[in-house]
Length: 218
Length: 304
Image (cartoon, rainbow over all chains, first blue to last red; front, side):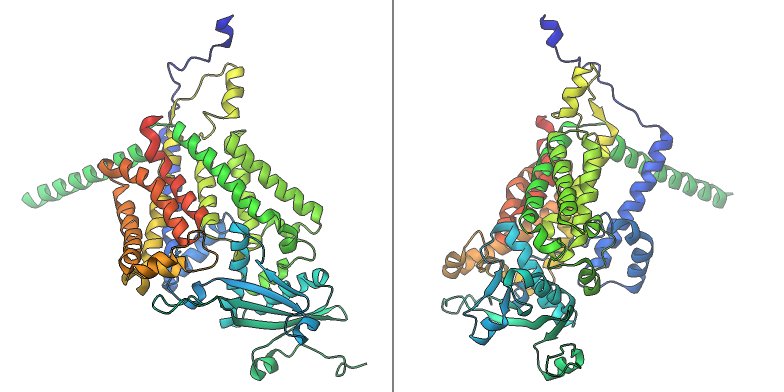
């Protein structure tokens, strides 16, 4: 009876050998992958890479490494002590809340969320803030605003990205404060999504997609 | 005559050097290795994957749903270099949740070792696809998880301590002991651990705060931090400097020392503790955990 429950014998262990042909083929694949890994690290780093590295990586390696999420620079400095390394959050206000200084309907992200879930929201907020520097934040901000039309019950919202500045070590402790790094008005007019970045007249005139009810052709 | 003899000697020497390199290469990659360390990495990777994927669950529809905050065209317009994502096809909540559940099931299969290698491939593809759908939400731990899953897919990660093994035992199939594919998988893990560490180290050394010893302050003085050492660092500048320099020193030592047999095991064991601590200090605990998983094979190989 006991023999029926015995584990299969471990000796002699069947070590699967790899033929020379397979070794050669796998060696080539490993070599190609390692080159791709090296170029990914060189080509994705913030310090910049040569046009040659970017071109080789982009043409030969990115097409198959990027879909597998392997075209990575891994250059996470963790911090450079810069303002953009501080915590960011997204705030969405209805037009009514905007009028009374935020006392009305205001949604914050990450808000009550914690841990990795909150970290993803902070990354989104930080990406919008960093993209704003290159005038590339509009699509994301518009998406964030439009995504909150139902939740807020309003189709005219202000999306802000706020940052908690890190105090210098030598300064006296102060209560946490927030500073605005990006703001845009997002609304839907006749089913059309419109966005105006609230960053001064020059920026407003560049984008100018917002059409008010008074000025729109009837 | 002497000239031709020198030329012949040089050719033979080059051929010998080439042969040595070839032998060393084959020994490094294909010397059969135990699949047990790989099994430990598989279980931990599956668990890490479930935790990371779980952090998407509560906001999945808020981000990627039909009326979500990150419509696929907005992500493309933003300038994502990302490629096609299967999650972009999820135009209904049902389809979105079906795909996401598929990812969770694949990660659970990785953790428990059911159709292990296939599960690793499916989990890696779905995970990459989820990250492509919203690349601005991805963090360093997510990158590491993708690398871990792809590396595991190469080797027999389900050969032991798995449902696969139980099923094979029931069918009376012999157990796989050492395998050259396990070696390929384990070497890929070590190479990636080194590559990630070197990349992190190089990017840190470009910042003044890592040289003047204040990086730890900027890392910990954030409301989102799990490990709040603000008061401690405010009282002691030396302690803050020590935390900063110790981080850099460990990373440099790890990147080099992991390649020497004499220091490999002790550094890998140190990594099991040091990486999670660095992750906590940096506010990226899952990244610290992922880096510790890379250390597991070299830390525990002799005990399995």
